[in-house]
Length: 133
Image 1 (cartoon, one colour):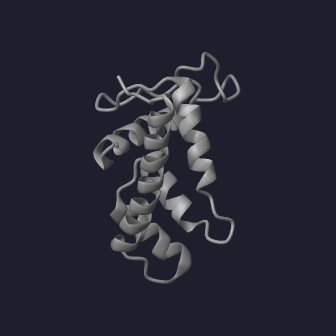
Image 2 (cartoon, rainbow, N blue to C red; image 1 turned 90 degrees about the horizontal axis):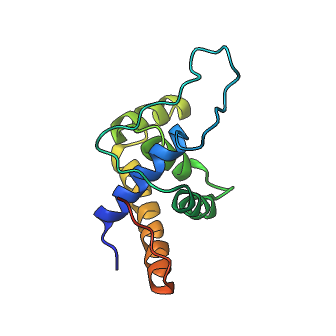
């Protein structure tokens, strides 16, 4: 069974992949724009293969709840856009005009991380482990 720390490392790698798309070989923006070049991956993030990242993408897509999209937005802001829990709570409070605590953000992230950890453990048992270099 994977521990949560390993799952978070894999999710950080997936977030960098989802935000960057640097290993694809083509650009998503039109030529002539100022942000055409891919962003550099931070040194503390381990690279992840496209196949593994797409697999995690599928897992993340399964977590989306149409009735309650807020936890998914917390998850994406945390892992893809690399925001702190405090910043996410502050932005959610501004958007809703209702207090969103950092603990609420942390609990939503923990629930989603645990779901991904379970799915990764399930894949390990089937024989398709996801690894980060």
